[in-house]
Length: 322
Length: 250
Image (cartoon, rainbow over all chains, first blue to last red; front, side):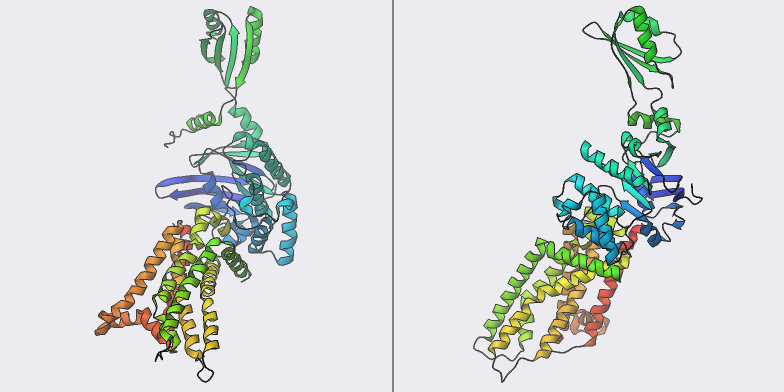
């Protein structure tokens, strides 16, 4: 890890009138890291990225990118950053190659350098065959790749992607994800998303943003464990209702039990265990021991929404008012 | 400077790609054509004491073009980028606010000048049909074009400012038209307020676009209207830069 972080945000705050979109956010991103900003819509992810990209000024706090202040040394910072805003706005009336050439030139590349770099990113992003097409006629997947190519054309050290995979079909999503992973080897990347698996697939480290604050900052693996901790175990068993309830009553590892008899004689049980306890083996063993028929046994992962609600409760935050 | 050239080229090609540009050009050719017809009728068989340019500027078509065309050509400059979100990609590239504003203003102004080009053809026709013993003076023609350019610069700058203020192109056009009409209608005060004494009369007479054009079409190149239009344009461009910058301190 280099001594100077690629991004250093200190007590970053952004207010729109009385509403604080980002409150006292501090984080560091080291060179070469791939960091995901995860949060629901309106959490402040885009605002953080806009401040990093130098589009909006912060109301308070400082951000330094590679040692440059994003507000006072905006030009130096902009040269280091490749930024793809939310919804990937492009000039629809231009051709792909022409657009990238224009972007390369306003980012300060000379003619020869621009020509070489445009050819390189067209190749890199799989756009060579559509280089002569008008952007407005391209499919969403291609447009997303054009946005990505634009972010890369001046060989930035830091790449900021705001919701890069939103609205893509699974095939396109996979392609874009692979391209991002391909980049990750050489550069520092910050990606925002509200989709957990999306972030997990690409990012080594995740910052969870909620109501303008960072609630968690951890590796994707640790976070997954933490997030899926209690969960719900669902089992469908053919057994008398009373026996089932008695079997689980008084067990410390089961926090809550709900049993719903189904029409065909089975009972659907939803067990909520203590954090860190996986109830599935025990349910299976019990069913085998008592001779109950078991036709479904699964653990439901928490949805992101539940994760956020839990995290916000842990952080002692009031519920967000929408 | 290089960024300015790249941006200017982008803005100009944007005009060339847009259907609306060609519609605008067609409408202007039609209006100038009507003006041209009324001019030919005025000269039909009779001898007029007034120079060609004076007759032409006196038609309503001239003012219609001046008032309506700049809002139409400038309305998209900032408003469309704002509404499409491309303003964000543009402003997060290492380009200065002033460079962007100047490039957009220049592109709008050049396109405005382009719309007046059909008049040159009209002049060529005149030249062909007048006797060689009485050639058309080129000075009033040149000064008329100078007037067209100066007034146009003011109006294009007003359009830029209006476009920077909003993300709706329609609103930008209406705003620019309102500003432009206000400035134009001040000219008519010269017949009432302008005949009096004191500062109000002086202001009205200085601001009168009709007075400015009257001088230009007669071949009089007065520095006062030149200074007025150049400084007014510079002030509006400056304001536009401030509006574009305002996102930084809002």
